[in-house]
Image 1 (cartoon, each protein chain N blue to C red):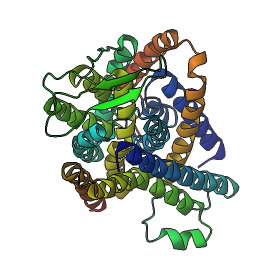
Image 2: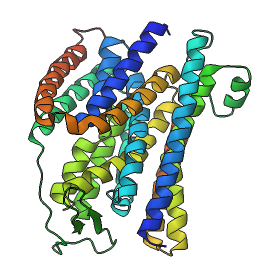
Image 3: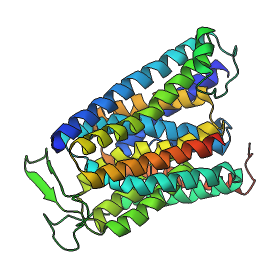
Length: 281
Length: 112
């Protein structure tokens, strides 16, 4: 690979990690269109690299959230039984799927993610809500909210619906190389009753193992470029580190609105690629 | 042992895996920048990696870093399994085993 292209991928990955952490999205949603549309890599190579990038950013973020007690490890692991199955199914489908169909599917995901990013639906969890509480597993959790120093306690309910949605989130991860947080976070918050901060931290914790289940399929099928994957993993990891440190300095709402428009534009390019108007590798 | 202890061990695994894998990949990338284009950009099998590293192949170093990173979340599941077994939390130990079985199936499907 030409050294200029390698430096370009590294810089884009740094930017993707930084923007992803500022916007509350994984870097994959930015990395995949860049690798596919600008650098001309196949969708499978882009998705494989992105999955490893997701493991890198998830590992970094989760180590912080676990230390702070924000990630609910029990809830995360129970839901991982479904996300890993979904991820393997999604990756197997992607390995044998036409490039153009993957491009269109990614375009649809971008449209959904841009609306999600602007709307950010949130339900305030009722403390220790006993209604429909999960009884087979004790998945209740608590954390100290740094904003006011109060301890937030919560119960988890509707585990069956959560597992079903997690299967879908995992399939999305394996199929399109993203972390699946755009599905997982609202499901844990709105359906299962976890507070938004705990849902986001638990989703981050889960992404590593979910992406791993898909990444193993791409790795085994030789659909990874070690150089591209290394550049993306190192780039998004350091980008996300910087992003998490400057997040409080940035006006999140206006940045999210601006980037939602950019994502719609990228989605249109992915649709054009899917339709064969743009070059498909 | 309690939830706080589990958090402590899981965090240690995540930090150690992250530092090790990102460092190895960064070394591989710098090595590759010094010797660009000398080796094919392909995934090597885990058995080939040590021999290729000893021959000075930077792609093998990158492959090793990717494997370390992939192994990190897997190691934290194994850590949690040990914790749950010691704590006699059979249901959560079963959950951990189920995740490991799915990953095992993925490895077999990936290799076939």
